[in-house]
Each structure stands twice: as structure tokens, then as C-alpha cells.
Amino acid sequence: MNIYWQEKRSGQELVFDLGNEQRVTLGAVRQTKRGFDAFATTTGYDPGRAVKGLPTLEEAKAFVVSFEPWNLFQGGVESLPVEDGVRPAAG
Image (cartoon, rainbow, N blue to C red; front, side, top):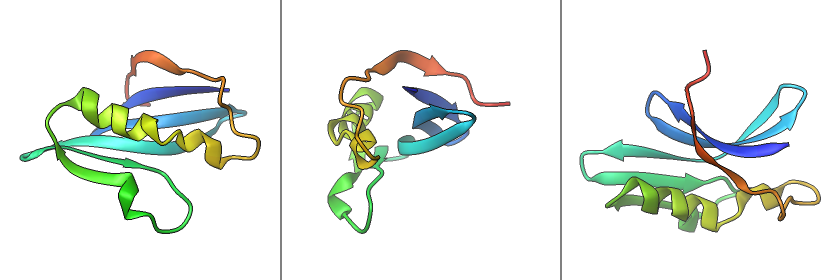
């Protein structure tokens, strides 16, 4: 299991790789004309987990990670760090 950022056409996604080709999107960031938009995955409706117009990519990614969205899964994975760097888009 690991957690990493991956390039997407519209920005970057935070991915939780569970192994056996099972991957879950934990959140995403994308650049817009007004800055960066970010959202962290949640169960149900929680508008506080999304924000628009952040000034930098780093702030947008920090917003997503601050919610620790991986804890939504059974048992959580508090000790699993987010990998450094960004993986290229999947082929």
C-alpha cells in the first residue's frame, strides 16, 4: 500500500494504491484561471473539503492532505506517508 500524487490531464490526484491493481482517489488539485482548486474525498456531503482559488499548487496539495482522507478506509493508515514527488500520468 502507498499514497502518492499522480499527474492527470486536469491537474494532480492523490491516489491510495491498495495493491492488486486497486486504486482509490483521495483528492485532487487543478489549476484554473483564478488559482488552484482542491478537494479531499469524503463520505457524504461536506463542502468544507473543497476550496477554490488557492494561490499555489503546494497550498492546494496541503489542503487535501490536511484532511487525511485515507482514514476513511477501514483501519486507516496513519503511519503511511505520502510519497515525495509526482508520478507521471498512467498510460
